[in-house]
Every structure is written in C-alpha cells, then in structure tokens.
Amino acid sequence: MKENNDFEQRREHQRINTCILVIISAYYNSLEGMILNLSCGGAHCVLEEFLPLKTKVQIAFKLPMSTFESHQLRLQGTAIRIDHSTKTNAYDSYKFAVQFGEVPPYERKIIEDYIAEKKKNDDNQLKDFMR
Image (tube, rainbow, N blue to C red; front, side):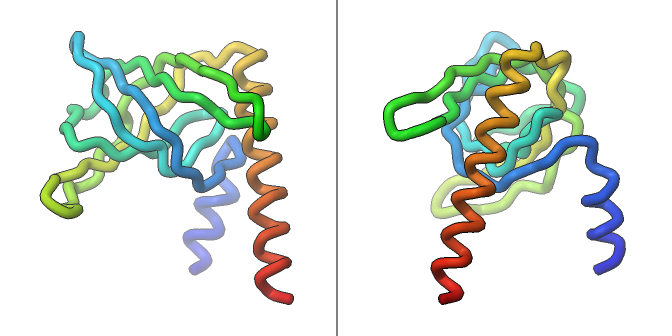
C-alpha cells in the first residue's frame, strides 16, 4: 500500500479517472479507443489494436467542460507503456500509456480545468452517496 502512495506522490501531474472517446493516429492509421485516465502529462488508453512501445502518436479527444461546452484537443505523444492484452466480450483490448510531448499552455489549462471540475463533481457525488 505504501508503494502505491509513494508512486502517486512521484507523479508530476494530477490524474483523474475518466472515460473519454479518443482517436489515436499512428502509422497512417486512425484507431478509436477510450481514455481511462488523464493528466496534463499523458493518458492511459485502451484500444482493440496493438501499438508497439515508443510509437509516436497523435491523440485527439473532446473534453466536456459543461452541459453546453466542450474542447477538442489534438496532442502529440509517445506510447511509453503497454499492458498485456485483456479479453473483453469478443474483442482483445490493449491498455497503454501515452506520454504527451509539449502541451501548449492553452491546452494545458483546458486539461487542468477539466480535471479540477471532474474531481469536484466526483467528490460531491461521493459525499451524496455517503449521506
């Protein structure tokens, strides 16, 4: 348990669990998947296609900011960790981590705002559940 806390403390950026549709472009292919968690430094994703380690990718996703507003982001990154495949329904899926390259300040602010808002909403839902 302590190791997990130490690992979390070493993270440079705050991370939030989420479920966001993503398009990963690599090797002239576009693959659809999901972002499972997100930070300003990268994303943990799941795809039905395998991506080799150190693959350069473009990751495109839309962050919902409110009921009527969302922001489309396109960032460059590198696949830095590949988890073993898992079987879900009839499909194989692969979990992998994408480390973002340089994130421009405007996009960084959008991600930070999304994380802060989602964390606040998640905390409020937990409080309501515990009542």
